[in-house]
Amino acid sequence: MTGVVAASAPVITVPRSNDQSAKISFRNITKEFVSQAGGPAMKAIDGLSLDIAEKDFVCLIGPSGCGKSTLLNLIAGFEKATSGDVLLDGVNITGPGPDRGVVFQEGALFPWLSVLDNVCYGPKRLKVPRERYLAEAHAILEEVGLSAFAQHLPAELSGGMRQRVAIARALMNHPPVLLMDEPFGALDPQTRVLMQETLLQIWEHDNRTVLFITHDVEEALFLGSRVVVMSSRPGRVLEDVRADLPRPRDFSVLGHPEFVKVKAELFALVREQAIAAAADSAGSTRRTRTK
Amino acid sequence: MKNLDRLVAFGKAACLPVAIVIIWALVTETGSVPAYVLPSPRTVLATLVDFFFGGSEQSFSGKFLAHFLPSLYRVAGGFACGAVLGIPLGIVLGYNRKIGAFIEPTIELSRSIPGICWLPLALIWFGIGTGTSVFLIALGSFYSIFLSTLGGVRYVNPVLLRAGRSLGATESSLLYTIILPAAFPSILSGLRLGLSYSWIYMVLGEFTGVNYGLGALLLQSRDTMETSLIIGLMAVIGGLGVISDRLMLLFMTKILRMDVR
Image 1 (cartoon, rainbow over the protein chains, first blue to last red):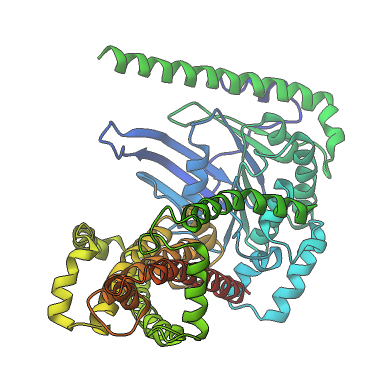
Image 2 (image 1 turned 180 degrees about the vertical axis):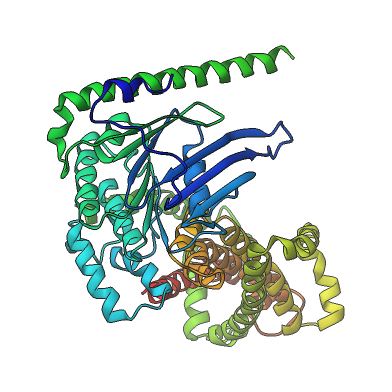
């Protein structure tokens, strides 16, 4: 089961685990959700350990419901693990904070604020002097190509533009860690590729630590320096590969023979897990019906 | 094109009222219905003109302001009380479920008592006139303002709160920068609903026998069998409701922009 990809692909090496200098560490994490309606507790993650090195771009893939987003919510501080430690620079996470920027699937822009005010929200809360954050906000809007839309409301933008604003907003606090929860999942394929390229451009010149959740194997391989595959529920690390394709990357890498090969292997792996997940949920439905 | 569309929409909306007025005119002008049961549109209009601008020997002639201002004060006072109680209480209970658990069930329970049932008690407590009217209006507007505020504050999209927290917002700044702006549309709709209830309870309060007020005059007109004034006053009170709603909408959206920037 393990090592399929690593053994056959020279561009890929399995990273060392239990790295002491890890930026983010998940240590033997278990997360259970208690049913509000009184049903049995659902185990989303079971004994997962994962270390993420500083300045690494880690993509987490897996079938839906495997606990990828839960993992991100744990490091973001939105949820607490049932057991185990979630560490940032070796310190336990106690709650959300501006040292971890988050980009949500649906952008989560504040609909009553203009693009500029959305982007300035973070530095305002951190009492950054106005002249400094305004200059920065204009610079970052320039970088994501939205200078002309600074005074627009989020509702007046397309989905892709909204996600650009969300990324700009998350970057304004200069977080050492950027957490992205399927940020391009709702975009059309063309917009998605452009957004991926924008993100890579930004990342390649500041190299912050990124945890990027996606269900798209191609996206994970295109963006990440490392791709972690999670099993179907309860989530465990199934495969952990280095994706050392040359950088800076652009869409031409998608045709690289090594890329195509690894993508096919990872896709097969995720598909296997998705089938397992489907069979599992069908099985449990049948069990409850016959009861 | 947009103006044309609006004109067409207005035309469609006007069809039924115009038809009703035509039938009303036909029925009354031919004398098939006695004037004290249903006066003609012409008579109602003439009575209203007299009520607003004067010109006859009638007791209500030119007395619009004399009746409108007391009613307006009662609506404004009662509505202000309802809003001043409802908005802060809605924010606190919406924001903090622990406090809510102590207070919300009582408010829910008391809400099942129809507003009219409070009238006799209000008369004993506040006497005939302004006190009772203001109390009933405050009571009537409070529930819708309180409940809308509570719902708006409680059901803010949790993703927005997560976004705010991860951008460095403290719990208190979350309230001012996210929860209140996000709840604003709900608060506004609660205020609009509360204002419409205010006009309803104003009429009820003034039915208790005060001398001045649109509701008071409405009841007096029944005693003097001024049917045309009754119908005219119904239209006036309805129209004031629409105007006050529009004014508030305008005022609040201006505030919204001011709050946001």
